Image 1 (tube, rainbow, N blue to C red):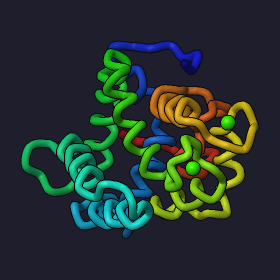
Image 2: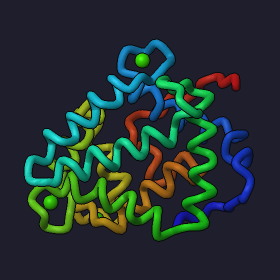
Image 3: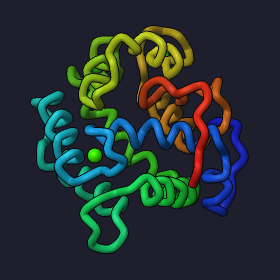
Image 4: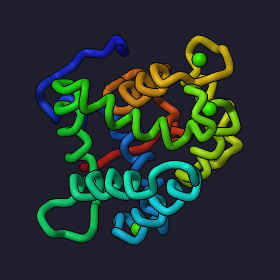
Length: 194
Ligand SMILES: [Ca+2]
Ligand SMILES: [Ca+2]
Ligand SMILES: [Ca+2]
């Protein structure tokens, strides 16, 4: 577990400028045309890339998991997701996942399995590059990101390391954390308004 204080209060995270930078980085990845909104087509485009990344994996399982995620971002029947909606959802999710580590593990396990394409229980450099490609992150960033997640530096990402990186990305408030680069480079300074 990352050595991070935990709070029941979603505003605990959303008041942290660093946490907001990370969540904005994640949001920007999903907002493919950079218009400040994620629409379902953009979401489906990434889902399609995930499916194509892992031909042997159960396509319907990926689509179903992605649809559940999409539904969790949206407020009511809105078909768009703004950054305000997105960060609120992420902050609430931190609280849920803190209280339900099993749900958190199921979530990351599904991702891990998609990218462990040869099913040997590790994600290696080339599998990780594919992961970045699917998310639209410059594969040139692969080494930096891979090395920060591969905390024991044995050249492979285990499920435990992967899960830890997710926890750190979504919960951690330390720039040196193992999950900081999970969704690509984080800007050094970015002013944030709510
Ligand atoms: Ca967009
Ligand atoms: Ca593998
Ligand atoms: Ca490792």
